[in-house]
Length: 58
Image 1: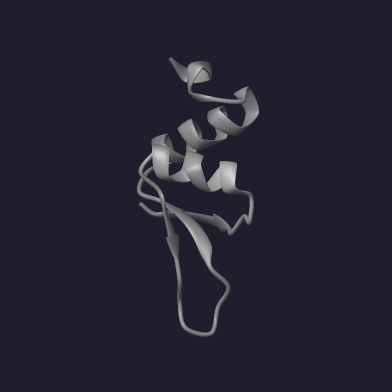
Image 2 (image 1 turned 45 degrees about the vertical axis):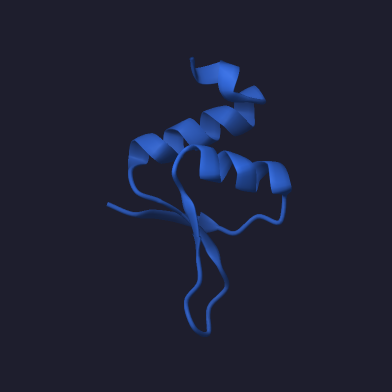
């Protein structure tokens, strides 16, 4: 199941996206989105954002 959320310009959020295995997806005629392969990846991303870094989910 792919989870998509709106694209963020924030470089730190993009780094967290990459860290959890997410990608930036582009579709013709649409705005880019952050894509996650699983709900678990998305949850890890949210934990990084809310906790301020990797140590928050270890």
